[in-house]
Length: 253
Image (cartoon, rainbow, N blue to C red; front, side):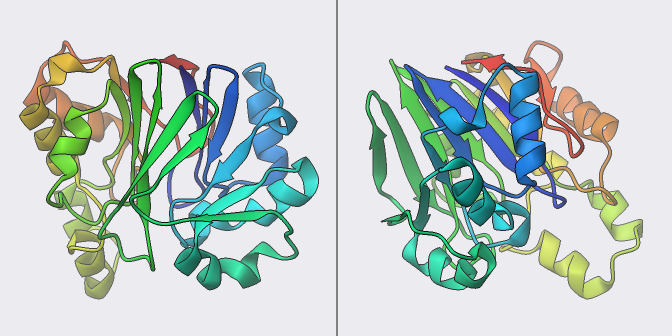
């Protein structure tokens, strides 16, 4: 299994995964041109992608999904509540396929397991991509470390894991109190310490790598996120940063 993040953060999200000849995109929050160019820079053709799967209704994950279908012919997989919420953003689309949170989607030899999250979206999900006994987690926009999340994290070989904010930077930063409360709350995002503690509980030696994802522009910095994880986990676990500004390297699972 091979994967890369095309971009990760509140300015837009998209993750590419390929396995056993199946090519999938998770979320469509960057422009069609950016997605095409960034995949091409990694030797991949967006027109060869088999499906676009949407995690939830927030704009940074879905704003360009309709363009991906119209321009590149990608079928869109989305829950019905999310589709109802974003239908106006998508524009004209003619290939939308629905699933329910908790379903497993099958693409030939590849299975994509879905699980509902408490993030403040209408029907948000996370994904686990499984192929030939390898499992990749796509765990962002989580809300909080909800019951069942450690078990999901324990079940994968590698993961994109939300590490959105540093608590001190959030408290001292420019966000008004109501927005700070939303981010820290049960429907918001995981902090650097919460992410690091989840990995510690699950046993960091089991993972091929963890990609720290969905970092805040104002309430986090890459070096702060990495330092927090290293303080908790030590140096042995390979950590990758899913950038707000460009694609990650191709990663193997």
